[in-house]
Image (cartoon, rainbow, N blue to C red; front, side, top):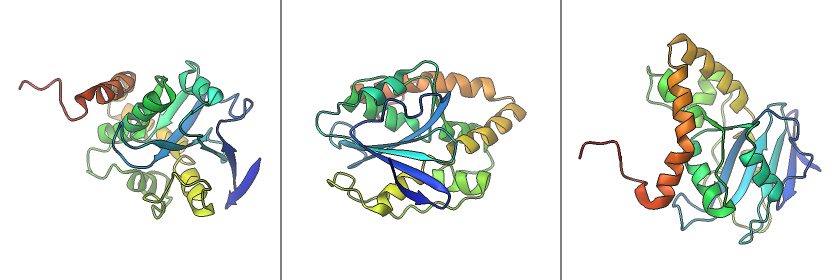
Length: 213
């Protein structure tokens, strides 16, 4: 059920899992997650937020430690739905560790930005969103307690804001990638991304296995 609004955006908050009918007709879904930290194997996954690009968002507070979320897991592995992330490498690894699924197929706006926006080194979500869609995201809640029993209104609004613009950002980046002739390279990177996440989980998080040394 809708629990809040962000401007004209409706935010649906869910306990434990997505409803079965939520996002059922989407061909692509923007996804992000909130955790208790950034270290794999130590910090738990707490929240997953999603949007199909229609202007609304779904915020799922997961039940720990069971992580019984069959509808969410089904969506993450659905081959007919492209999952759009910004720095998906981390989210995909977290989903594998805590939900037990390999997320695919995927698109990562951070990878796309690094391939297309070579005129800058600013590839964080805040900078990319500001330049490409003219929205200034607030990051005030990024380092808050996502493991608490009840999320604050500010946390829910923050979580939603991180996925509301990813479809529009993807569209802009796709135009730039095609213009520069790098769209095929980007697709190959996206296909490899779940495997890169599994390397992180397996202990090669800080190693460049393609390096000579």
